[in-house]
Each structure stands twice: as structure tokens, then as C-alpha cells.
Length: 248
Ligand SMILES: C[S@@+](CC[C@H](N)C(=O)[O-])C[C@H]1O[C@@H](n2cnc3c(N)ncnc32)[C@H](O)[C@@H]1O
Image (cartoon, rainbow, N blue to C red; front, side, top):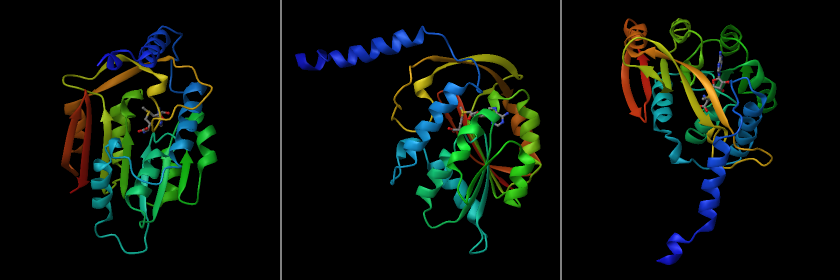
């Protein structure tokens, strides 16, 4: 019984987290420390050989399954991953569908691209703009964007631009939406909570990250889809929304 309470390592870890939360924050998504941290975590994550169900992969499972419907055998599933960091969701799909050929284009910031390009393969490529990504893909079966819209200047405009590409399936993960009109807010997270997996790469100090976030009006977001998309499922978790749409 006493052993349950006397766990000094637990208290040391809590104290470290508390001390870290008072250190100088990283202030934007271009920060090299953050991109290096995410890159190194992804390199470690890419080594796993079986699926971690804690990653909430059921949304992706459903999205890719719908995207694959009516696809001719031997043709790749073409995915545009907007803000896809170092390609973690591509790895997830490779684990979920080991026999499916994918063509995966990530659109990212210049800072993320500098690191991520080292992870390119024949089926995973990184681009700085949407047009180049789509030119390589030659069409989009699935648009995936996980926790990105809120970090953009104009999330509605980007939503509309991406929907103009007419992807067959659209999966928006972990969105920060507003119940009323669109508004600007601030978000505070910790560096060690970023990137895929639980392994913390060595040589990093945990620090706060401060970001400006634009919480797009949920009504405007849904209206942008109304004419051409059918809502297939939605999930709400800890203030983040996930939506899956398919083309009508
Ligand atoms: C919270 S992270 C999510 C990363 C990844 N989608 C995931 O689920 O792990 C937000 C991502 O959006 C990217 N991002 C921010 N602004 C962007 C922009 N204008 N165009 C493309 N990506 C952007 C960031 O570089 C970062 O990788």
C-alpha cells in the first residue's frame, strides 16, 4: 500500500513537467526546434511494425475504405495530406492496409519540408504548395488534414480551395471549431506532446508552445461542404472535432 504512494520517479517527472511549463515558449509552427522534434519522433515511429490502436485509427480506416470503393485494381489510392507533418498518417495507412498501394502527397511549411524531405519514398512526397502536390498525384481520392485548419490565417478559404479539388473522401481530424462566429484565440501546448508516438527523442528540453489559432465557425465549415459532400461521421473529443465526408 505504502509503495503505491512512495514513487519518487513519479514526483520527479511531475516536477520536471511543471518546471518546463515556466520556460521560454516556442511561438510558431515554423520554429526549428518543433520541426526537428516532430521529425525525430516520426523517424522512431516509422520503425513500428504493428498498429497502435491508441492513435484512434478507426477514422482513417473508414476514410480509406470509402476511398477504395470502386477503385480499379492496380491503381493507387491518391492522398493529399494537408499539413501532414513528416508523413505519420501515411505510415498509419501502410499499417492498416499493407496490401494497398498509396500515392501520398504531404503539403507542409518550408520549415517542415526541410526535414521531412529526408523521409521521401517513391510513394510519399512532400510539397510546399497544393498545386504541385496535385500535379504529382494526378487527382485526389482522399483529402486528409489532421489538426491543421486552426493554424491558418484563413481556414475557410483553404477549406474551400481544398474542396475545389473534388476529392472523393475528406477526413478532417482534430479541428478547433467555434460554436458561434469565427474568432481568434491562443493555444498553449507542451513540446513533448507533439509528434507521433510516446518515445521522446534525446537532446530536447520540454518547453511550452504558444500558437495563435483561428477557430472557424462550425456553421461556415459545414456549409462549405453542403452542396457536394455528404457527412458520413463526426466525433467530438476534448473540444476537438473530427469529420468524415464523401462526395455526393
Ligand atoms: C498540430 S500539427 C499536425 C500535424 C499532423 N497533421 C498530425 O496529425 O500529426 C499542425 C501542422 O500543420 C502544419 N501547417 C501549419 N501551417 C501550414 C500551412 N500554411 N500549410 C501547410 N501546413 C501547415 C504545421 O507545420 C504542422 O505540421
